[in-house]
Image (tube, rainbow, N blue to C red; front, side):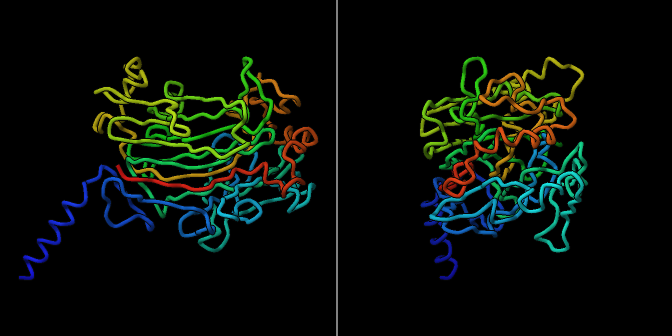
Length: 374
């Protein structure tokens, strides 16, 4: 009788639960997943430290950005059901002289205060008059310990920040580098923007009026086919003036990006996968890292969510040849980019409106994050 009851219960569950393509893991992942289930949600009624882990590093995100990521309520907090990622000045904490002669050692003695990225002197730096310490403090949070997933529908309602040289991003990285180091294992950029209100390139506003969604993939860093999978959309009202829903539909066949239910772009590889999609077949002496994966490789593995606000950087995301009311104060080739940026603070800092509405106009604001199973 016990066997029959157990069998009938299992049969009823199976018939009620359509098997999902989505795979999840992590401390906040559901034990079982049915098609259509809401498998992750945060409405930011509070800052849940069991869901979001702070990155603590001076490394500059791999792009020599100017911020120092820390776990501090000046830079990351919630109120009224909204997450705020807000920049501040390092000098406000340590004093301006500290930038050019101080030492920051951020690998603390507790688990919660450990440096998370040691690359590019990410755990310890000493400031000099030529190369100052990271002049900005900000936050970067992730779900790498709490929630990872493969395939699903993502919707994040967010409002972009306004202020010169701010670089907000909501994106995903692979939980495990199954195909090798970046970008061989992929990167999914749901939304990126620039905070400048009047930043123009080729007569197009590439600041707050524009957002982009991008896939990064390639056998190694110098061979990245992101330019074949990047889409932009402009909104004359600016993405800093209201909340918008940034969406990703990720299936075993395609990745589709949308904003407010309007498709922005999609990547649908053929039978030879992202190797042919990225036109890497034109490099006959380079091995395909995805040759034993599915056609969606590297986007057939679990990824985790990241929300951050960067500033500046020297990788070209802030173009040298773009026009801004106050010209860009550093060159992407400058060995003293952060110092050049800081010396020109009187030109960009007023655009952050720090003394208006608690400076929250310069904050990346997120209303909710939701992920559904396929």
